Structure formats: structure tokens, C-alpha cells
Image 1 (spheres, rainbow, N blue to C red):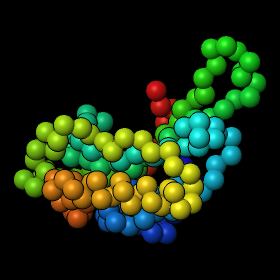
Image 2 (cartoon, one colour):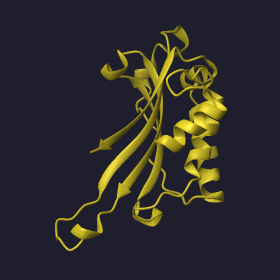
Image 3 (cartoon, one colour):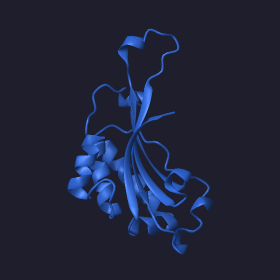
Image 4 (cartoon, rainbow, N blue to C red):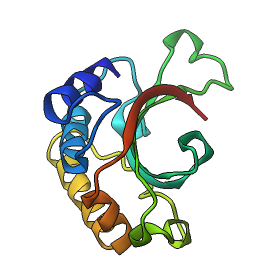
Length: 161
């Protein structure tokens, strides 16, 4: 999380005060290119990313966009256990917006995320990010949010699932 926070500060401002979605996306893309030790391999879904949107209670039911990176952390000591599963951790940047008619029907899109992508770091991941961005731009509500200025933001590291 510290690495993403440093990248955000350089590209988009303080993690709790991001006001430019494009700059945040560029910072997220840079963060996704950094190798992380101690996680499952990409082909084992050990390092994935997702964009989510909606109105959630933890964001005071305000419209939000979220850029998340999910890690499957392997603990080699427990691998012999037949019920072993990696621990999943998520680094997430949430961008929260004011209400606006342009995205008032955000919850009616039928889905609230792009789905996880696990492409390898490098050119495959860059291409996947481009596809994800085109997917988001295909929805007028999401495209309008993308062009708007968030009212606040937050960067977290939490255990997932």
C-alpha cells in the first residue's frame, strides 16, 4: 500500500484528496506493474485487479469508483495442510463523488464491476487495463463519473474474503 500511496502522491495528490480520476488511473496502472514478493503466481490468480462502482454504506451511500489490486499471499509453512488456501488482501483506492443526474441510475447497470483480471505484469497487463478502460467508457454513467472531480478519496489495505 505504501508504494501505491507514493505513486499517487507523485501523480494525483494525497491518497485522501485525489481530485483527478485520470491521474489516479495512471497511478493505479503504474502500481500494477510493480512485482510483489510473497504472492501466488499470476497464473494461479495471485495478483489481480478490478474496477468497481456503486453506492455503498462504507462510502456513505455516495456514488463511488474503486480501483483495486488483489493479492493471494502464500504462507509456505501451511501448504502441506489439505485445506490450505492463500490469504487474500486488497489494496483499494476509492473515489467518492457527489450525487449527479449523469450517474443517478448507477445501480441499474446490472453489474457493479469489471470482473477481476489476472494478466501478467508488462504488455499483457497494459493491454488488459486498456480493455478495462474501454469497457468503463462504454457506459455513459461511468464515463461521466470518470470525467468528474471526486469529493474525497481513500486508500486502504484490507483482508479480502
